Length: 343
Ligand SMILES: NC(=O)c1ccc[n+]([C@@H]2O[C@H](COP(=O)([O-])OP(=O)(O)OC[C@H]3O[C@@H](n4cnc5c(N)ncnc54)[C@H](O)[C@@H]3O)[C@@H](O)[C@H]2O)c1
Image (cartoon, rainbow, N blue to C red; front, side, top):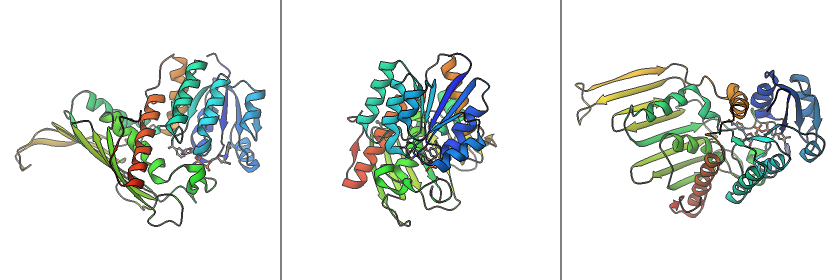
């Protein structure tokens, strides 16, 4: 790609205004920014706040009249697949918010469109771009804690609406495709697979415990990673402040990242973990959430310009979606679901 890129953002709500538009706005190599949203108020907001040169109410008009080099898809989940496919067919690289689609059929169609157009897709798995999570990935790959055998993740907050999202689509099954499990769980699932490896089976519980909504507001997933590791994930939309982050236990050490500090413990211990152990907790990073959203567009554009491929690309998005859909199936039908057979 050359200088003077045209970047389009489809869906100009909260994540567009907090991540994608500021990301393109600060880049000297982005010459033109286009916003798309059916709500005139959103377009007014982004015209005022960012260097938005043109706006459209419908993405089809954008793609008929403009030739964007890159497109961010930031609309409600149900629109992700059709908009990503249309953008790819129009010749754009796509930064696609999570979840990438609502079904594996849609996910495969995005992959087919990307291959046919010879364009790339990066999934918005922003947790991978936190400095702390990148350190954890490097520590695991270096064998610092040995082979992981157990991972525990808790990602919960008080829910996206009101307070974050510009409308209540998150709580509408038709537009969201699911609740806290799909929304928060997909980040947790992706991190688990990035750190430990493919999830092969899942058993899940989900419930609507507190909010008067039609989708789940809390969920628990029990994970199997082949023969050698287990894990569990808790997600929620009804939580005040509490533990947020994950723990990973390996044969030769442990990692705790509570998203305010990243601590690592290595060495050997006696069976009862008494005081004589040769282990010590070290603070590896006291600001592990540096990075993330502010660097996501840079990562997207810099990787494209370097001709590289995305680790958070279509395979990562598709396999995370498969696990999330398997978990929903498990919770709805009361059974353990084999993921390996789905992808
Ligand atoms: N990566 C992350 O950490 C993260 C965080 C928040 C949201 N997200 C994802 O971003 C997406 C948007 O979430 P949000 O929080 O910005 O919600 P939001 O409600 O604030 O914004 C969605 C916007 O899309 C617009 N819209 C509705 N229908 C549309 C259509 N057919 N075409 C184009 N735009 C349309 C709405 O008017 C609204 O402005 C979701 O997929 C969500 O999962 C990701």
